[in-house]
Length: 529
Image 1 (spheres, rainbow, N blue to C red):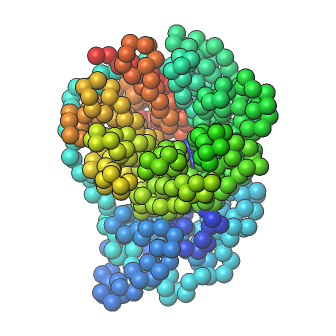
Image 2: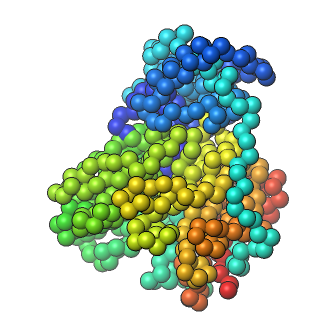
Image 3: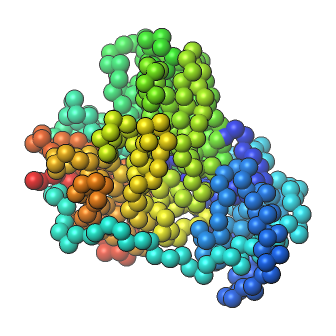
């Protein structure tokens, strides 16, 4: 994934090496050691129109084969020149003095990078072309990005939730990578690093397991409890992920439905894809520079069908979109070519991909789900973008929550946008039971030194996709990577669960500067009417 999360977990065909779009792959985080290219240019020279045209043409040449063209206005001058362009040059075989793109990679990762030819030894572009690209972005980018548009009313009243903190054990650094509520068993599952807990509604631990890999997804199906382990949580191309039944009433199934050597998987979905009355499994392998979106016939590793090896497979949903009785696979790709794809089921286990939505590579798409917002009988798309652990970790006005309405033919048009820096996930539910869908959302990928009460928002739907935003101070005590919803206290109203993740003690220490005084693994928000 773009980040050290499993999203964002935060989560190709062989990488198209050297292409401009691939420069924005999110595996490594930018840092103070990056080389500077003309960083002292506070007022870059104005380029003649002819030179701008040449630079834009070169940028488009090396960009659009991999993803949407990133306009200079998407980032500020400093970020282009100091963070993004040095890495882009490396991916084109251009070395910038003082900049090592693999300085944070361990020896094993360096081997993978070499095999994938992510940073070629020989230039794939002339020096003149490269300089024209640098000049183009430096001259056309804004000095700073604008503030996001203010289209939604902000209420002075808090949302209708009562917050309570859940702490397990004496662990100093919360690392919740999995948070799932099971309404049938009335259990809350919490995966904190290598520990997995099941809590009842009295918040008493009913079961616990020690895992070999952090859990990032789970589901009850086929009288079993399936778990997905990410393997390596930090950006990596190592294939150490695993899908397996943690508990099963069927010994044969427990032996056969195990899939190992997955490339940093972050989510899975279960359903019958080929009409043989057996459950198949779709696994999103986020990877880093190379990933894998694949479905497994009968959940067997030997029944693998690869849909793409592009990196960034973030989430998949199995659902019949065109009413032909055959389920489609919808998949969010969150790296390089950021897009929502629909794999239309042709029958017999054959799928045809169609891109439903595309985004520039700095958008950082992070989550999606389907819901009928306008009650016309066609599913719409709720999508978040804000993954910001890449080469441009700055506040972006286009980060936030989006609703795309379905025209009835599975063409989706943006109808609502709520800006939210670092937004990582949103859920749609009629919390207040007034007949329309409200929203809750979290922002994990915001600045560590500016974690605030706006890392969680409740968007009350007042009708016709008009929302009012509500914030609450209690949610400032966490970095919310994971979220789930469900009626935990069985009062007929849905509650919200937030899971906090700090990659290490240094990150937690930075957050102390924001005034955080408590570091729970989970925050429970009980709805109170």
